[in-house]
View (cartoon, rainbow, N blue to C red):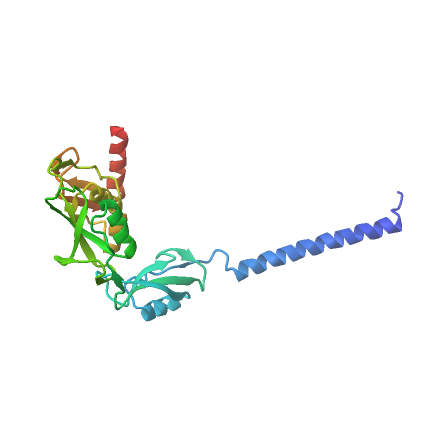
Length: 268
């Protein structure tokens, strides 16, 4: 059998050695990355809502996580100084040492100036007030030769003027001119919509939100905005006076929501 030339034998030995070295390095790097990133090991993020930042930090530290307060807001329905939102959300799986960003409820509300909206279009006023950080309350209709035009604002049943300082998140009622030629309006359908979407649709259709009635699937008020309207009263198909109350029944029950989807497809 013919022997390989010395230079070729030397070349093949070096190539083989290089391949072995590369494979060895690759295996080492993969094992090191698995160990460094704790591959396959996750921590479930605890629910930090309603805790103070210090309590949330202690709870997170116990789970080998970190916390940082990045924002604050003011909500009269939540205890001041407590966590109202977190990211990542509760029950999310993350790596050890992951940072959880917190939003807390401010102790004292920020003061906001009431904008000038008198004699302004209704929908424009809605956008302006919400952009300033106010919450929309009830619609009040009074006789006027200018239907649906904003005639004034109220807070705690008292008339307020532009330039008034109110806490951010204050509820403001809107006084609108009534339309004597169209006292009755058709009720839009909001079943299948989120509560937030339903409220927006009804307000823009000149109706007030009556009672919001959750079922047993909703355990926190924070879930209300994303809950689905499964029933409304009065139902769509009727015409009632503008400004009438529409009650909303809401749910997060998957079976009820699926039934609503099936009903929608059947109607279509």
